[in-house]
Structures are given as C-alpha cells and as structure tokens.
Image 1 (cartoon, rainbow, N blue to C red):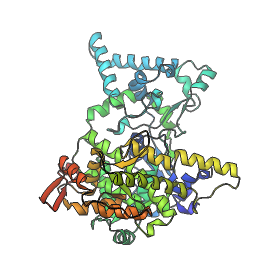
Image 2: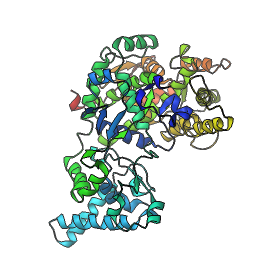
Image 3: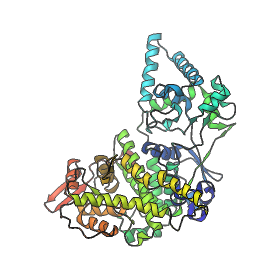
Image 4: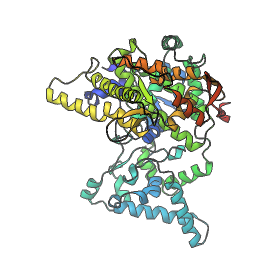
Length: 535
C-alpha cells in the first residue's frame, strides 16, 4: 500500500489496518474539532520542519525540496507551551483535573509575575487578573477538558501549542508531589503523542498541499481543462502557487500585536524557562514529531485547497474573521477529501467530476421535491463512503471478527458518520439532531465560497459562479445542477421549477456580493480589498 501514499516512508503498519486511514490518509477523525483542524495545520506551518536531514524554516519546503521529496517522513517541532496554557486555562478547567502540582506551579507563575510588575500590591493583582482574562479570551477548543488539552484561537504563532494529555491515574499512583517530578523521565506525566484532539487532520491537509505542489504544470493544466475548474493562468503553475502561498502564510499572523506575542512568550518562557526546555528539547536538540501521510492521488483536492487558501488569504479581513473562515475552509477540505476519495475508488469520477453532488437547499426551503433531493444526496455521499471503505483499494483482515471491528470503527469515527458530523458542525447540514438531514447554505459558508471563488475586486456572472462551485466543490443549486445530481443518484426525473436558485441570489444580495444588471443577468463580486502584504 505504501506506493499509493505520500510520503511513502511515513506509512506505518498498525494504523494501516484501519480501512479509512488506507483510503484517506493518516488521519481524519471525529474527535478533532473544526478549530483544531486549523490549529494543527498552522502548527505544522509555523513549526521548524525536517524532511530527512533537510531542515525547513519557512511555511513550506522550497520548490526544489518538494520536487525531490518522496520517501522521507515529515517531522516538525511544535512547542508545548505548558506554562502559558496553565496560566490561561486552569481557571476554565474541571476542578477534579487540577492536580496539586498544577495548582502549586500556577501559584509559582503568578507570584513570579507579580514580582516582575513595577506597581503597588493592589495594582499588581489587577494587572495579573487582567492578563489572565486577556489570555482566557483567546480560548479556542477544548472547554471543559483538562487545561493542558485545551487550545488557543490561532491568531498568533505564540498561541500554537502541541497536544498535551495529563496522565492523571499515573500521577496519582506514583504520588508525585511537585512540578519538577513530572518531568523526571521526559515529560512522562504529560503525554504528547496520543493525537486524541490534534488527531493528525491538520497534518493531512498540509501534506495534501505539499503533494499537490509537487505536480507538473502540464498535469495541472490537463486536469483543469478536463474538469473546467476555472483556474487562472498563474494558478495553473504550481511554482507560482508555491511562491504565493509561502508568502501569504508567512505574513498570515503579522497583524497580531507584537505586545501580545511578547507577553505570551514571557509568560511561557520568561517566568519559567525550565518547563519549556524539558518539553521542547531533548538535551540540546529540539524534539521533532513524525507526521502522518496522505493518499498520493489527493494532490487533486490538495491543489484546489491551495488555490482556495491563497485566494482567501488575499482578502483584507478582520483577524478573527479570517481565522473563522480558515476553520471553515479546513473543514470543507476534509469533507471534499472524504467524498472525492470515495468517488475515485468507486470510479464515478469518469462520469461526473468530482464524482458526487451536494444538493444545497435554501435554509427555509419549503418545496418537498428539493428538500427530498438534498436529503437523498447526503445519504448517497454517506453510502458512497461506506462502499469505498469496502472497495478494491482497501486491504481488510481475513478474520471476519477482526474485519468487522475495523470496518465498524472506520464507519463510526472516520467515514460517513464523520462526514455528517463535520458538516453539521459548520452548518452545512441541518438539523443537528433528528430526521430529514439535508444540505443548506449559511452566511459563513457563503462568504467562504465567494472569497475563495472570486478574487478581490473581480466579478463573475452568476452562472459562472455556480459552475465553479459545482466543479470545485460538487455543490449544486439550480435546475441544471439538480438534474445532474438526480442522474448521479439514479433517481427518476423530477419536475424542477426554473427558480430553484432564486434564494441563493437573495442571500448573495443581502451579503453585498451581487450586482443586478437586468432581470436575467447578475454578477457576483468580491468587495473585499487586497491585503497590504499581497499587493
């Protein structure tokens, strides 16, 4: 199986028993939240990296490194930032998870910080409380978990931290009594290799991007012509896209105030350098984490992800708004991976690229035929993923009990159920509970689709905009698209009114993205300006 994955040297035997990991890569998993998909992706982007013995300081390996990269697994060196997490999140964690050593070290950090503040006692306490509230305000995912298993909103490189799982039972059994004892055997009471919440989904998206940028311009051009993807002349050149993405990712967090970065670094390393050294270094050498792998053919969705990422980062947006849109983009990319990989295993891409159709209906859709078609398309995607996990590219154990165990696990946490749960998290599927689940559009997804389809200041006809969404995302709205979806579903022909997409025009107009030229012609435009760093 290793020849169908990238990089080939990263593939391990044990995870490959899971059919979903064989098919989609290592790994997309239901316990990883939308926010944590982005956090992990950016954690790889902004960490020091290695392929073999070659170090990578920039967000992406160089063009030459990508071209030569085949077997060596990707390794990256994320920071743990335990002090910053403890300072920020212990007050927002479960009481029963606050071990004695955690509380004592927290008090040590607070007292050290107070001593560094030049003010009277009352003002010092006020400054400390203000800083605690400030950093708690950047809480991202994991509310309710142990403090070390939570993550920050990724608005600054200093907020990006690797997963740390507190081994409570082991600490209780060993009766550890002080913070230093937790690190006697290489952070033995903080497990940083389980991948429970940072479950490798962000690594997978990063590797898809790298695999895509390794393709030849000729291959990209042929694929674009065949499937009418609407890529520009520049976007057809992977070398150009690589350069633009490297620049955009480098400047992604430039707008975060430098004072906030310095404060975060001071709390994590300035108050207690030893903890950072114990978690981030092995002696004098940085600790590197071995990343997973992606399917070799995922370069197609990886290239579309790269184009969409570059277009989104072009837009001049509020920092937090950009983060939320990036979260949605990562989630949509995971959904596309599940659907597209499954379609290719079942060979449906030869009849209708990308091999599936998502019938997106109006949020308040009243017409039974369209609601039913949307529900059917959701069930069909789930069924397609189910069948692909049992398809020709998957190697299953001979023992029936073991085979059923891995298939059930894949269905529940890595396959069709993951597709539905992830789509519900971003509002692409409603209702969250109950019968009649269907695809719908919400404002945040609509904004993402406009920003990643229409460049800042550009205009596309409404029909062209819909065609781009159909060919790049498999999303359909109008009578023509619904008819193709009906054919893909092998359903009986339906009578569909001509105004099936009128609601979409209304949503675009309400969001300020539509210009009406006449009753029969409208333009979709992107009113956002270009970021200063992109000019």
